[in-house]
Image (tube, rainbow, N blue to C red; front, side, top):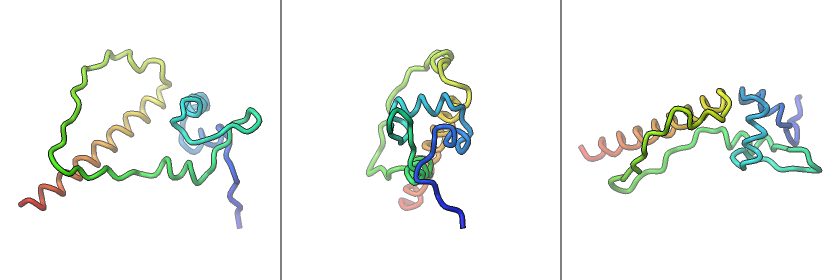
Length: 112
């Protein structure tokens, strides 16, 4: 029987997520990845990482949804991010959009 480690290192998290180690450290520093420092070393609890990476259901809107108007960012706006992190951000955005579309499709089926 394999024991589950009580915590993961940033390198292990990078391997699990397919991200560069620098990107994991960056997310830890910004607080966008769950983890804590213990004696100067980052530690990530596996169950918290699993919860963070699990697909999240989009909240059900209770009426018409007003989406914010966003100006198109210059193509260099995300240039400071590693390529893998840019891909992850895009994937997260498409997952969120898919959840909204699915939610709206369910609402229109209830109306008909």
